[in-house]
Length: 169
Image (cartoon, rainbow, N blue to C red; front, side, top):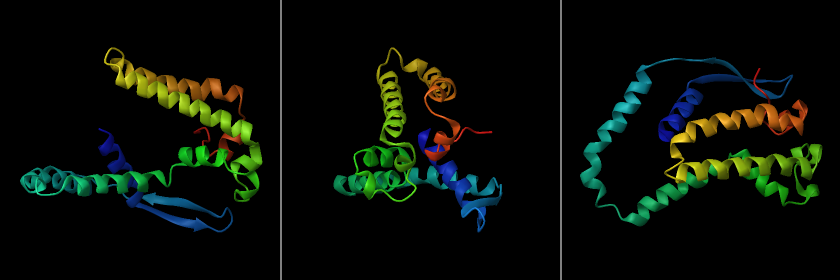
């Protein structure tokens, strides 16, 4: 289920036509080409990989582990949550100009990051315990309530925008 979500997001990103706006100095989405053909082809290729299973036993386990290690490391490089955890421990002067810690201060950024860590641990705990795993979708709903009602008590909308987590309109 998680793999399909990542594939879908990467597919949408690949089918997006965007342009750089000189005024705002940001990349803006012009259009997204919607097609069902490419999704069907991608998933049929994934399904046909079942026929490669007899050949996979000849691959050494360290090679497979290395591929997953590479993919995990590659996905972590663009993750703002992990970057914020790293940056909380960095000296403020060494951060790039306009960084959220320089704009908001370490305490506010650390508060937001600690709440995210707590929510991640709660999700992990619910998922790992077989007695509570059935409530996992409800916990996802609780995350939306925390973001919509609890966090705005401590952070303003401008601060959410600075953190890269603006409220959807």
